[in-house]
Image (cartoon, rainbow, N blue to C red; front, side, top):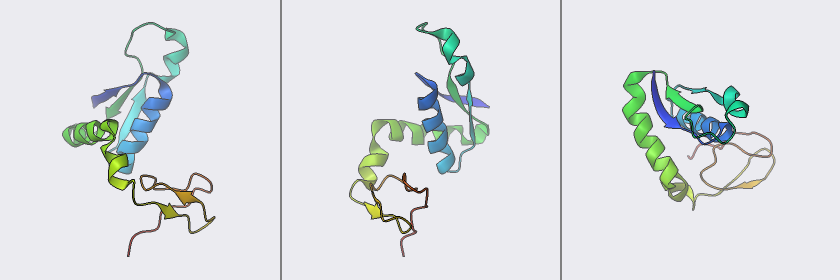
Length: 107
């Protein structure tokens, strides 16, 4: 298991973990339960780890691209409407924030 990202806080770590998992890379968050104990201390307790070392390089490249905003820019003009509830969503989202329905596959 290799550490791929040190997060500033638990929500950031879980967003990164979810992003990696949505790209087929198994990941875990470590140290998120310790956040309340560290306060403002400059320590690297909350981090994201890739469970398969062979996936580390791919995970690192995806994460760098994601944190630069490349992913959002790639899909910014691909807005879609949820087939279940009709909500308008931005292109980078794969699920509806309102009802949880998955984005339909393109024909």
